[in-house]
Length: 509
Image 1 (cartoon, helix red, strand yellow):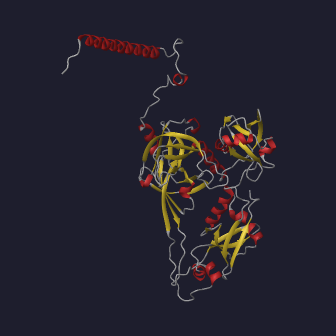
Image 2 (cartoon, rainbow, N blue to C red; image 1 turned 180 degrees about the vertical axis):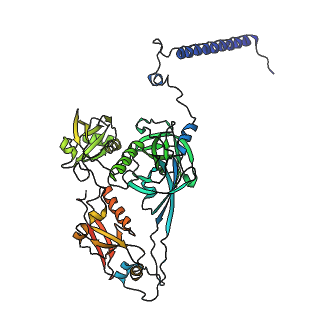
Image 3 (tube, one colour; image 1 turned 45 degrees about the vertical axis):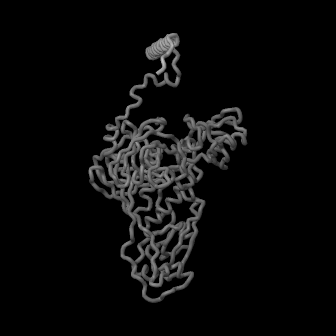
């Protein structure tokens, strides 16, 4: 080993000594500054970044004990099981459809013996979740959980089971209200979804994959998400996005904050596989409350309409239309005679506030309008050129007036009563379902020329097996705001004559 020259060794020691001195001095200085900053919150002599100073006195901001929230919510979340008829095409012994319309166009391929018609309609079973919102048995869930179901069964967290009745549903928000006959049930208190902040902890409570009473945790990833999953003309999508694990079966379950308060109804997941892939979406409780209140009071949702066509503002749109702001929703069109036109709103305006609530996107504008009823008077703030203007608007319903939309039954509006199709007639016409028109009075059916005895087989391509199915098809058209589209009815008379009718519901209230 080579020895180092003494002078070199002294120089090296001096260098390391300097390093040690600098290091110690640096540590002391850092410690001093840190202590001064720590002691100096509230001291005018110390400058603290505003972003940090805002939260300097927040207490337990990172609290992650969810036991209280889980205990408060888990007993009020129920397991919802449904049975829905499965439409099947029966075949005869030669493989031809046992369908009157097939035979009408192609003739009777086999006049001989046919396969026997099954005695019971096959049923498809599905499940989801629900949230008890009153101790006398009202439960909120998703519309898609109970849609078209013939049987709804609810199992409580204590394992008691009840048959449930559908009170009403709103396809536009995917919310439904059902009820069981029970008392003194545990409930979840409503929270405030408007006060939710991105990054805030939330819990998803439900029954994924039939695993009852499951709780998962995550944070609010985003608010006001429009993911285009609701197939409705007047849809309102302003979802809370969360990374709490949600899977099939969670639909209709609770999204709660750390206080155990309901802030949303879990509705959908973003996934290419059908299972949880990182993001889930819930309907904000602010929307849920309005829908539920309308259903309980009026039997149907009172949908307020401003009468504008809105577009999301992008950088491209802003440059094209020479807009002065990227915040708000661009008014692409104003409907003639609408609340917007009457108020003075014009195409080219940018709506950035609805009744005192700032709105930065198209989705937020639609959500805020959706909280009101026809006849409500609200203030709309718009940016027009370089100016900001306020307009007073009286909202209307989808028929263009301010009246309450009635949940009057289809029997009254269509002018018909019904009775089951006899087994003998079903056998003769090779029908698996259908409902027979018993009588006709003044109404849409009479205007269309439908006669008593007509057997309704399909409405808008949906199989009809009962009077309730007719009502559901009727409600779907009205709730979706599609009265301008024909109400297509397909059926057959007892003599085998096939008939088709198209009814306009545009003037229905």
